[in-house]
Length: 290
Ligand SMILES: Cc1cc2nc3c(=O)[nH]c(=O)nc-3n(C[C@H](O)[C@H](O)[C@H](O)COP(=O)(O)OP(=O)(O)OC[C@H]3O[C@@H](n4cnc5c(N)ncnc54)[C@H](O)[C@@H]3O)c2cc1C
Image (cartoon, rainbow, N blue to C red; front, side):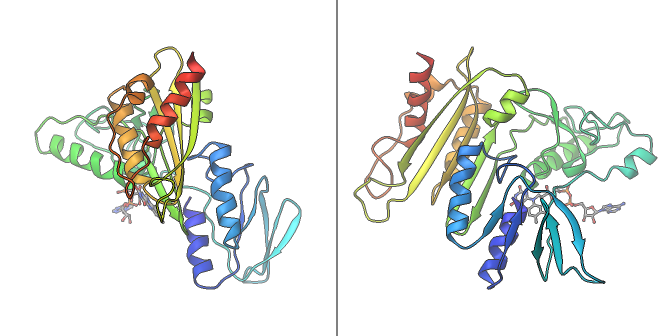
């Protein structure tokens, strides 16, 4: 995601940008392949060259990078931006014999306290449970770091506060397309061995006939047995963030897809479609569950 955001900024400055992605799709932590394809097509239409299923193998040049090789192909470049992801630097904790968890970040309890009494860990270096899987996770987002900081601060000052876990809700804007996720993607659910039904709907941000109506696609991931929503992705030209936030509340409150299909949503032609896209996506899932 950061790599794509940087690529967009560089293109806007007039540079020619090639993205090299090791996996078969862009935004693999955020979107399922068919949702990522929408973003990729939009970026390519703006002139970004995207190579998927290619690993960066070598930097070429004397003292300065002049090219890289990726998947056997040589790509000339004046500048190389490394955006391979973030790993927690836990050396300080390890040296102090503070235990790490299974994600290799610092293990914490619900009060954001490490296994060593009165030592708290928050943010990118700290582990916290995922709300859906209940397994330790390390989502490395500013939103989570701030919430964990409030909890740890209250506890360190003698109060009692619990951190509720993470859904890793995230959004990005790349040129004029926005993408967001909350909870699990279909792929992440499969990795967690959760049996799901997914459904998606392509709609508009305003009444179809209204000037300025832009495309938006909503995908829901629903746990088959309980019919609870456990993940959502939204890709569109506008109005993505607040839908992701609404779906994040729905997951946190353990809403079923049936509840969402009956949601009392608002409509006015300049502001929304008659049928809210989140509700239509819920109906798609319900049809598959029948
Ligand atoms: C380019 C970029 C864009 C991002 N955009 C978003 C976004 O849009 N939304 C979002 O939610 N998240 C975003 N993030 C993630 C977010 O910035 C991080 O999750 C968040 O900053 C983590 O907070 P933190 O306090 O754990 O770590 P940091 O913000 O990295 O702060 C840790 C601080 O500790 C200092 N430090 C390290 N070791 C020591 C030491 N031994 N002694 C004293 N100080 C030390 C470091 O210098 C640093 O200042 C982005 C990250 C990047 C890199």
